[in-house]
Length: 449
Image 1 (cartoon, helix red, strand yellow):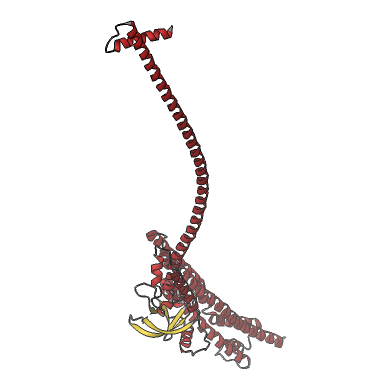
Image 2 (cartoon, rainbow, N blue to C red):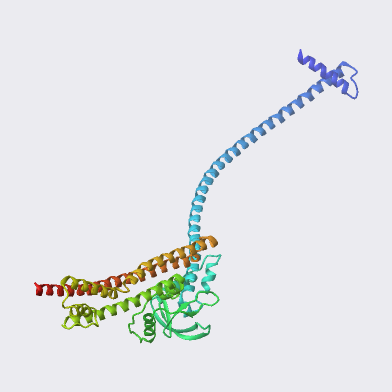
């Protein structure tokens, strides 16, 4: 029924589309048969084309699947290769980092070492003999590229040369700046890298870049060191000479020659209080000398009087003995009183000056304490004005305080010893007078008994 309906509809369409409509049923049937044939052919062609396209699509699908499989296999292979390359790249990066680290460390060490060696060589007095040896070090310390092997060898050679020169005693000629400011070319004896002498004087190495020469010290060390310098310069080849070595390369020598001597410290830092203490000490020393001379002279006279039976009024014992010879008939008690009176008269001259010496050795430490207070006041004034940033600003006041204290003790201690000694001597003389007077009383009492 459906095919018939379809055929009918097709016939009507052909009739409508035909350029010449069918006039009879036979024509119509013929047209229908032709249309059916055409339709069948078209359908066959469509089916054939569809089959061809289906087969073609299957082939394309198979090719696509094959290509997909190939690409998946390639992807797996590339993934494995990528992972392997990643591991290899990581290993290479690690190796590169280690090697670059070693080279970078070498670069930094070389630059730092070149700067340190340049500073050490500039500070070394060997540079006066081996001039121009630090020029390449300046460029090497500022280099932006890695150093070459010859440059490293040159750096090593400079270090070894400095070490070797530090153990040599060398004579050479170099400019020397005198104290007057004149520059002279003199023969210099260099003792390693520690000391340099010329004409019996010690030299200092000036490390300023604009100068770099030897300068004569304005103040020289003690005479024994100057004598060593002269002996060193006049020594022959292979001769052994004793010499003072400044292992700090001039720092101790500069400090020694710049430091004040004890006398300079006393006169410059003691101040007015120090002058008073010194004057007091000298005055006390003179009194002690005078008193010692007087006591020993009196003691000698007393010793001679003890050997003589006649009373000599030119000494204390003679004047005491003269009391008995002038009063031979007085009673014993009166004679004893007269002898005591004579001893008292002789005691005062013997002890004269001892109390003043005692006053001096008591006052001297007090003056030292006064100087200490004055120095501390000056120190606190400096702290108030300039703060505590620079200790040298406070050094003057502290030095005054300490110097005056030392001066006070230096004066007080000898005066105390002198006073004790002189007082003992005076007591010994007075005891001799008392013993002789007691002997006279005993003899008289024995005679009159």
